[in-house]
Length: 330
Image (cartoon, rainbow, N blue to C red):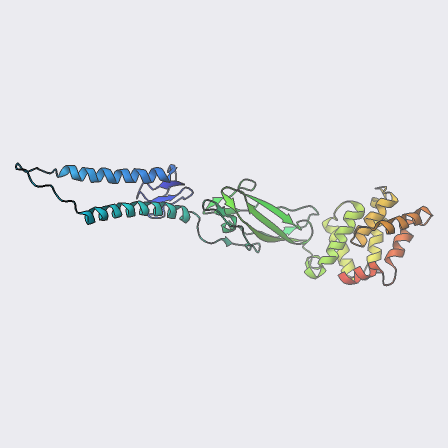
C-alpha cells in the first residue's frame, strides 16, 4: 500500500489524497511512499528514543556485590503487550488513511444522473458511481449521433474518458431521451452508473413524448429508403403533418419511396422491398413473402401498386401499425 505522509503533522494519508485528513494541510508535491517503509521508520524512531532515554540515566553499580535483580515477569509481559498495541495502531492508521481517500457517497447533478447497480470495488480502486458529474444541457437534433464532452470529477480531480472510464450511448440520434452508461477503467476506477440527457427539435409537436413513435417512423422511413436521417426541417414538417392528420401513413411512405432521391439510388427489386419492410412495417421481410412480391414485380406489377396494395389492405399489418402509433393509415 502506498501513502502520503503530511509534512506538517506527520499524519498518514492515502496516495490520492490532496489534503491531510488530520490537519487539512495541502499534500501537493508530497512524495508517495510505501506504508511498510513508514511503519518501519516510525518503529525505528520509537526504539531510538527509548534507547536514548536509557543512556541519559546510566545505572551506577554499587561497589559491593549485590544479589541478582529478580525478573518481574508480569512487568515484562505488559511491556511486550504495549509494543504489540503500538504496532497495531500504526497499521490501523495506514489502512484508515487509504479508506479516507475514497470520499463519501456519489453525488450527481443535472441530466437525471442516477447510479445503477455498480460492481464491487477493491480496497484500492474508486467506484465510478462516486464521481460528481456536471449539468448536461438538452441537445438539438442533427440527424447524427450526439455525444457529450462530460465533466466528471472525483475529489476535485477531473477524470479522462478512455483513461479513467468509458461512455456507451443508447438512442443518441433521434429526438427523445439518451441513456449513457459509464464504466470505470481499472485499476484506479471500477463499477458503473447511468445518466440521461435529451435530444430536442425545438418543435413542441416533435418533442412531445406522446409523438415519439411518429418521430421514430419518420426517421426510420428516411433511413431505409433514402439512406440518411431527415434534416431538422424535414423531421418537423413530416411529424407535424402526420400527427395533425394532414397526411396519412400511406401518403407519407409514398412520398419517401417514390421521390427523385430514392429513385436515384437505383435499388434492385429485392433491395427496394427489403427496405420497404424495414421502413414501413418495422420488420425484416420473411423469405417467402419477399420472394412472392419479387415474382409479382417480375410479372409486370409496378412497385407503387405493389406496396400500396400491401399498405392499404383493410385490417392488414400496416393499418395495425399506424393505429398503434396514432396516425391515419390511408
